Length: 214
Ligand code: SAH
Image 1 (tube, rainbow, N blue to C red):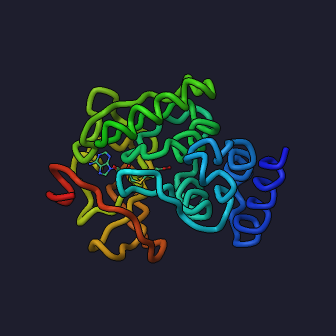
Image 2 (cartoon, rainbow, N blue to C red):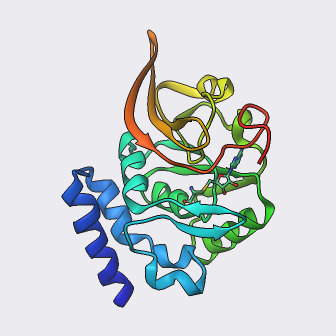
């Protein structure tokens, strides 16, 4: 009950007050128990207006960033979504509340296992997990209606653009290690269109077509 109250407050003060309007995003973030995606010691802080550590020097994003990125994907209930950077699993759960199926990839084994466990506990049967470098995407399951990268890339990985369906949307932080621009990319029948949603700060996207060293 306490957490439900904190969650509703979070949606009102951090999301609605700052212009998040997609009703599916607001409903999803009123529903997903964010406190269960962090360690017990941090549960009481889970609904605060900031990122939190999740181990392995990685972080769960601030709620507003999760909402902004999810809203930018313009998800519908039949969409298949690829996420690179499972981390705690929170973003994937938010996506899974809205979309048909979520494919999520993580390169750190302990985080992958922990996220898998919480998805099972919370019965998110529409989330498919994979322990692998996501910079080359998930070709077998492509094309995707939406792709979300939750780690900062030096440039947009080509394989991910290739795996986006016509009509598909992608969001990805692109920049150096300290700050990035959140890029929204859309593929239509004429090609690729990019817009810049503004500055952000993510941990590094490490892999074959990302940063080479962690
Ligand atoms: N979406 C996450 C945020 C995780 S932080 C959440 O809701 O908690 C970014 C994550 O991306 C980290 O767990 C990191 O290990 C992972 N990551 C970085 N590079 C990756 C790559 N090439 N492939 C898959 N995961 C990657």
